[in-house]
Length: 268
Length: 268
Image (cartoon, rainbow over all chains, first blue to last red; front, side, top):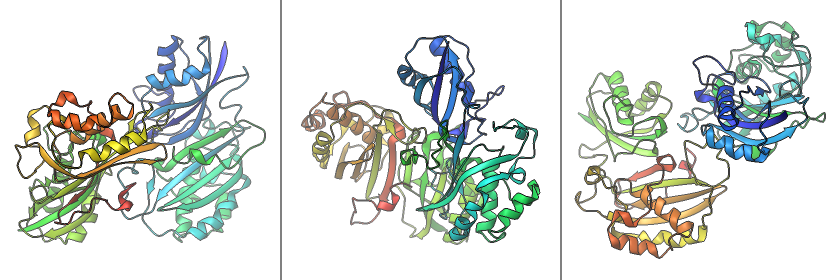
């Protein structure tokens, strides 16, 4: 058996999310079906973590074991030929047998795009959160780093049974995660949030962004971020920001983590 | 009765085109239904011309007569509130009673985007023609201006009954049109074609691009463009390029035509 690692980009708008579900289009299901058509083997690729319905990826990672001898490089062309244009394989590499896309992950980077102009261009509607209301960038900038370091993120975890199994940290029953970097930046008509950590709870990035929106418009102060963390109570934080703005940018497997993802991923 | 003019942008991917059709989603139908919900009046807005299924617009123009006294500026917000995010009203203005979006049009500008990288990013798949094969830019550049001026464009007109009624030129039964400018440009991984003329036959821009693709890859020479025009025979030209790359950029109603559209429309 060979162990293969794929790097994937996808437009999540028309899918129920990463995970296979009955009677729904999923990224995992489309990928499994393409691998099956290509090799005749029945495999379920494991992702670095689930992404929810409507969430996108610039660099999701999946791994699976296979008997087929097809060279890894050919797999990129062959799978892209079968997959819908909304899912692309960017890289395929053969990896050691103990590599597992979720269990071996050491860090992940997510990006969240907010479009601030008065009318959201129809070509961006699937790819941003349209939020045309006042948001003070300097306040967001100041509040960003307050979540860096190791914290209990219970206030930002979805209150649902999924939260315990969604992302593989060292201890799946703890809500403690380490954030390596958390930054807001401005680009044209957009505010972009980028966060890198050793793991994320279900809805965590979208709940952080929903809370930052309250801070940016002045409903909360930037210092409230620390109080919300300390409360360890979902109701202390803001609402869940829409899925359309969220991108899984990179998954890191090295011991040395590079918090800033390559710029050429920016507009993929 | 008041006469109103709207400027619209839309993502045409999920529509059967501009024109109302039974049991299909159309831009015209969505707009008519939004105007109806807002005003209670049953109007069918007239477009500057039809766009086909999958074709986009950055500045389509529509006009319609209405009794409602709603201020034109409020119409933008109100219609955008009702319309799906894939259709946006950019401007609404009251115009003289004799203004008609199609009959008053003096020039139109179309753009066509070709993505040339080996893997098409999933976020561009709806908005470009993915053509990862060799294309010589300098040859396209040289061939572009050969269609400028007044020509019979029969070689580039769809061979179907629609061609006679699709676009309102001075004489609807002639295939003669005047092209004010025709240019190729390079931007990153894309080649973009932009053409401005007093009218376009059905499929004309996509047939021009399909023919330019044959010239760019060397199957035809740039000089063949003049021979294809002279042939006045659809079979002399190349295939119809996919709808996904095509954008109606602007419609001009002034006597003085500005062939270069404003740059801020570029990424709308």
